[in-house]
Image 1 (cartoon, rainbow, N blue to C red):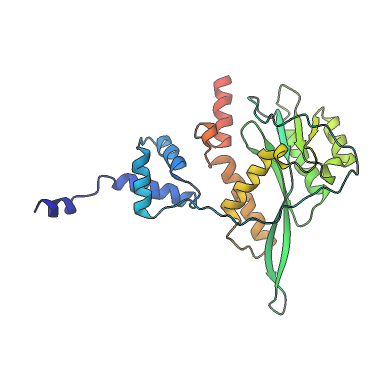
Image 2 (tube, one colour):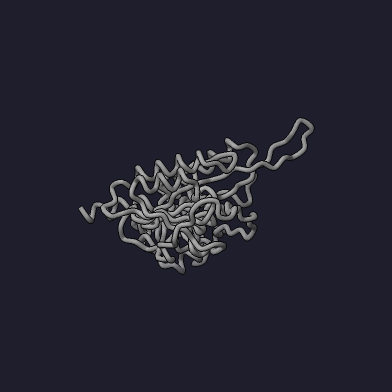
Length: 269
């Protein structure tokens, strides 16, 4: 009779299980137990991490992890303009918003069918500008081919966003052809911005941008098939909004990039 009564009793973890499942569903399986713990604390629940692991195991919840990687896209075409010095030297941390920006281009693929039903592989390209202060994507463009127009438009928007910085801004990139363009270099100089470039063939010199691309592709690209440029573009737009506004980071005290920026700006006021 004792055990029968115990089985009939409601689970004491029922509410927590429901909240954890809601968190996991909202973030499409991208959160492991550490981020679940931070999200629970934001909602007012203090739960031991062992209990979180026990509940996630019980519910069959696991953080998605993909090992497949696409070929790294390279914009390097040799010295076609002027190579800037590496001013960042892997000093990525800053406590000043909009003081250090970084950029790069990443390639995505989508699949369409011709009139005979044969699968055709097509490509899209993302050009974002990232604030090293909080990892926020300040501006970006998605295009069907690598082109200067997309990069210049994203640069213009990033410059406008960073005009409030009390110090001179630095924009960092690799030695890709686009960042050696006269128009790009002139735009940076005209706005009194320092230009910095990674050393040739050294991706670690721009690891904040590489890290963003890696996280993004794991969470919205690998393991999925997109059937048109517009479908892929909208998925990228949606993800960047999610990344900026909702996806929490341990290094940002459990806040999203935008939440962290607004929080620190209120403290400084």
